[in-house]
Figure 1 (cartoon, one colour):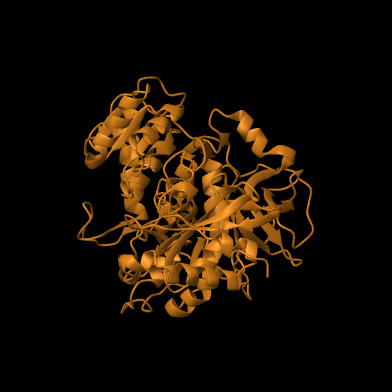
Figure 2 (cartoon, rainbow, N blue to C red; figure 1 turned 90 degrees about the vertical axis):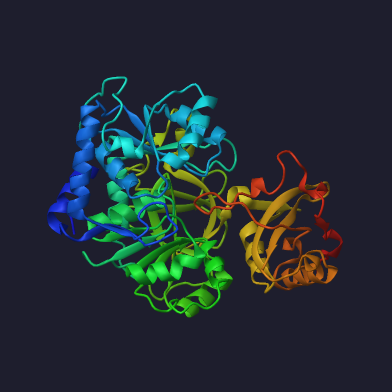
Length: 545
């Protein structure tokens, strides 16, 4: 394993990894004939990556780019995304990944807020990029990926320097922005290298060998999970990241098998989608030792592990801090949303609204820091152009995550819900995730999203949006028998006040590119969901038992 110092930069890490691991694979793309790039698959060794990055670095240097410049990449999940990022980072320039699923207005905001100097784009997304640029006042230079291999447009302003330091900003990643404008998280070289080292050295069930592991990560590279968390974890120990174009449940089993993956990454919605797949001849034919992810439905975790034969290691992390917690000890706490314990380098506090510790077993906000002596060490460098929001998040010397959790007497932390997904009904706090888990345990339900709607008497009421499994007829969607069955199912598992007071059947539940549910997109902007056609009022059925 490569020894990491506080002074190690991303370019130094790559050069040492290439020197040590040479012919071992660093990046792999599974074969997919339907893909418009690398249809036969691709494997790049450490030496090949270092050589390609060196050539690109020279191109950026000749064009005048370096520290002080911000460069957008609109390249989907192509391996070139990593190569260009590594090249620009070596000169101190900052990478700003752009989300190909964004609408023009959303992308225009990121381009303008980050004040991009240059954008590199694949041909099929060039029109989207031009539409976005036309909506804003920022006019970055634009070059296609193919043209960028030959020459880059000259930088319009001189670089501060053409070298990196641990404090140089390597990336600006934007939060998902489910409520309000997304914030730009500033991630330094030190943050990214330390995040990879943290993951690679967890131990327990999350144990990585050297130059022998292959991490299958189907998540988008504009997100911290694939771009930073697993990629630098692989690099620190000479291992390989398998980067597919996007998560596809029909391709999971074959890609995991064909690439020889030994670890995999998932998000909560991945689990039911894989469980809903028909039996596959390769679903138990794999080398996976564990999967890393967050948000698994507790009622389906055991079902998944028994069917596919590997443990789901629940973690907690966020873009601002990717020093994740891991529920990786033995014996494992399964089916309780356990996410791990504090350890050296990550202090955890479960706190009330005033920032004071609450008793074990009591829900409160999850607060984190590196340590009392140096709270912000290895965390993000702040929100771009928003010092007030940065300091507000760090009030009291702890980073306020906005997540609600509780802790066992033995120190195990259990995730409940994002604070914004807590429903307040007649003085009772209801976690939307708990109701979603109950609904998704019903045999007719493929997916569920639960949210709060106003209630004139009880402050808020529970609204459940349900996607039915394939094969149920349209007439069954609105059948009174099915509605009654779903209500009875929830009522048998949950306290009466947690059961849905409103129910709506939908064809799909919108998600971001990182598979986070976008509940605010389920109904038209500004609409009261209770008045939307097809929403069923179940409040009369809710009775105290």
